[in-house]
Image (tube, rainbow, N blue to C red; front, side, top):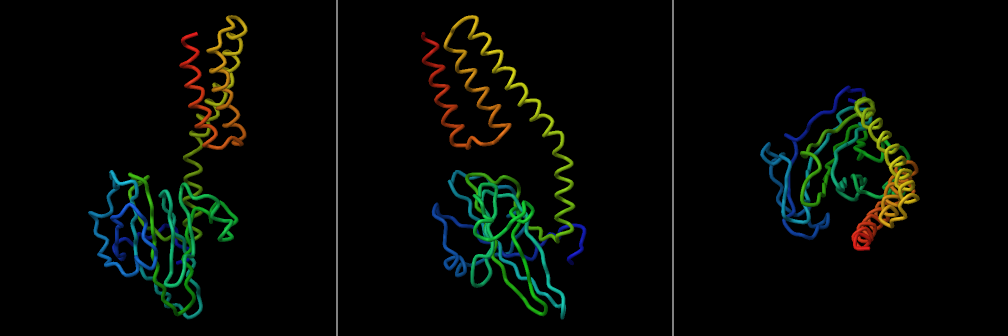
Length: 236
């Protein structure tokens, strides 16, 4: 199991529950709810007018080995994900989760994107997996426990496939820089304030791409202020 080359889909062995309120339920409340079989019709990517899509999967893993420990991970893409055992929360992850390693002592990028399933020899554990999305799911829901080996293989495949994206982003970064220089040159020639907006906007994108030191909220606020200034300057 620890050396398997591909992740195993366990959706057919899961029970399902979906929150219907705009407020998230606590783990204790969810444990008292009626879970249903996770049928194929429930596994489609969901879009909703509700601000919150909260789905739970319940599954049990048994380790029948007298001496080996099962060490698996759950890797999936949602806004936020959590994994519980009978007693407590054991892991958090998600595309918008902030520094989960600070609380759960996960030091590597590989571990931060995964939720741990560790079962000692001759024991059985039940898990509750919660995914949270906002109005639409990033990808169709799935649950694929994977070993370290299969996880590393998938990571290598993803990194290999992303190399073209990195080339495109590098080219765009260079374009932002030269557009900013060109805007500065035009401001020098014409002394029109609208070129200041182009300079600020393109150079902000350039430095954000190069260093990442500008936070997402700072970038969004600055962008909107630039649009407002550009609208005002257009009347000058």
